[in-house]
Length: 217
View 1 (cartoon, helix red, strand yellow):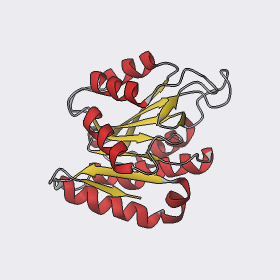
View 2 (view 1 turned 90 degrees about the horizontal axis):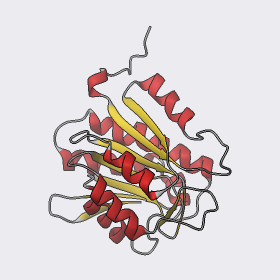
View 3 (view 1 turned 30 degrees about the vertical axis):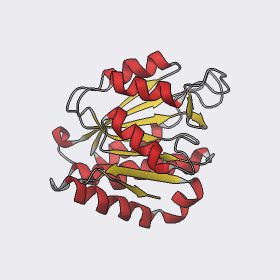
């Protein structure tokens, strides 16, 4: 018997994982098995995993997300001071400005609803509004989230998984009142994972109907 939580496949939320290397160039994907387990038990997502090593990789795979897909785009790699590091220990980090331009050039209209960085320090610690606003504007996403601190790999990966399972998937199946449901679900998510999210410097936000940014942290 299939689990009762299985959703119809055509309603499933597309989740695109762009994963860099964490410790060495020979490793297999590290976060993928956890998300595959969620896909098998919940049925509310369709996974697509790609390994990325360069800016061109990111631009290429982001451009492959179809228009109106309204997907969950998840960056899983190292980060430092708002710069991505798809290759562990690489000196050729992707700066925030370059990443923003890549998202703007590569993402199609309504391709991404949720943009999440499972990386260290991708959100400015003292100016979370500015970080989230810029990612929202350049990616076209409805929701952006990430971490302002250097984070533990396993703990942050578990919160990444919870964000997909307890926030993004329920929104995908909720009512059409977009701003109300994001606000409600965002606060509910923080309440449920308050201790862990605070310890990791998690912050997420969306553009409200009045063009302000509502932040959850």
